[in-house]
Image: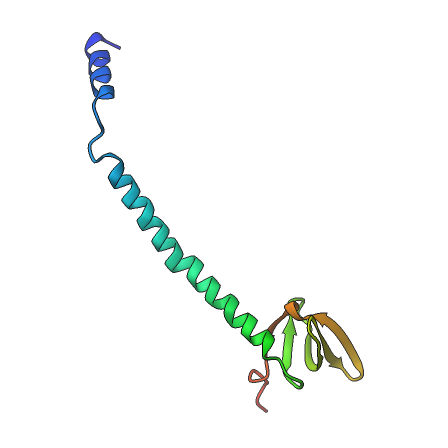
Length: 109
């Protein structure tokens, strides 16, 4: 490097950056607001709907578990649900593993 380049680098290092930290903080806040609006808010809404669905389960609802097991709710306790899978086969699953109601999704013949 030549002497002129070194002198210019030293002079620019001592000067305050144009735009400063204010612009940085505005961009960071804007980034957080956008991330909240598109990611965090919809996920919280979905979690609340799922929790509401689990609390409103009733006998006879057709449900799907997180493992993909289809069944009909037979008995509901505080933390577990007894689902009738096929014939006389019944499974007790954790209430949090119920992810979807397919009562309205039944095939139309």
